[in-house]
Image (cartoon, rainbow, N blue to C red; front, side, top):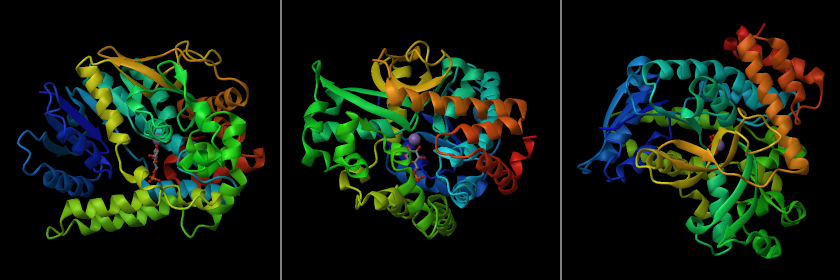
Length: 447
Ligand code: G6P
Ligand code: MN
């Protein structure tokens, strides 16, 4: 028996994970799934979707739901932490407050990401402490955003037993490999940075770097998501392909303007969209999986719509809409650990000596070799120039967030906002802190 506990088990992406589990028939696969959530109605809705997915699959993992966190964790083998503290209403407030101050309002980047971190880290630390006590041998796979920061907070209690994941590096690697006509499974993807702040610097097949071939071809460069977002000339000028989240840095002014122009923020859109879904499936006559899948398709089609509008990038390419990022990384990671199947994945782990400019405990997003001992970062060529500068600046901000939580220090929170490269004034940082404390009563802990 292998048990997987999903925290945030009433969350919208759980059926993606369950789909991947249903496809796994190997020895040692997950046999029991425990869904935990603070919201029982959302748990019921998602459990209905999973039951429909499992229909007719003889070895489908058993599913149990609970709102008792300790019960969910006790003795489990794997924990997926995919919670959203404050819900989508909280995300919408994170975005709105920043945009009202004229700075980027986004889930994980800039002021919005700092506010989200200040709300989430205390909860993540509590979870980490409970795991250490109730399931000391469990592996924790953290999806909870801001994923790098949250993983680092949890690693202070769980060491290397917590591993953070994100689907964006894998998606980027796949897109670039596809353009080059290369099998992604055979390519070495040299991607390095922090979560949502990394660069693909080379893509090697049989030791040969294929990326220069893409950078030399203007037309090919303009034909994929990152090429459209950043423009072929900027990619050639950088000599690397940045994570799509770098659009908020390289085109900050345009992104802020586009997000301010939008009728609703992304969080507000999703809040309304998902409320409709959870409401609809309360009616037992409504086919739950169908309702979920239609909502998922709309969500994916509108991903980063405001950024794409700002860049004139148009619709998302059909091949980007098929999922397979998020849940595949998680499953591949679990399998590598439990079957000792060596594989290479881009993960959020403690730095050790990978990036010389950062200390050993700083969580970074880098290629890792995974086996039954966990995830081991592979040595990579160093970050240089402005990439190194940005990574160090943002890591310093993350450290201020962790210090703010640990010391309940408002001054540290102000420093986090003020020192972020996308917040342009200390005055604004003070006002952001005040407005976020007004918007989120849970931030009253900052004194
Ligand atoms: C990607 C990122 C996640 C992020 C999500 C936001 O998958 O890797 O970290 O949460 O996009 O998408 P959404 O549909 O919620 O705007
Ligand atoms: Mn992510």
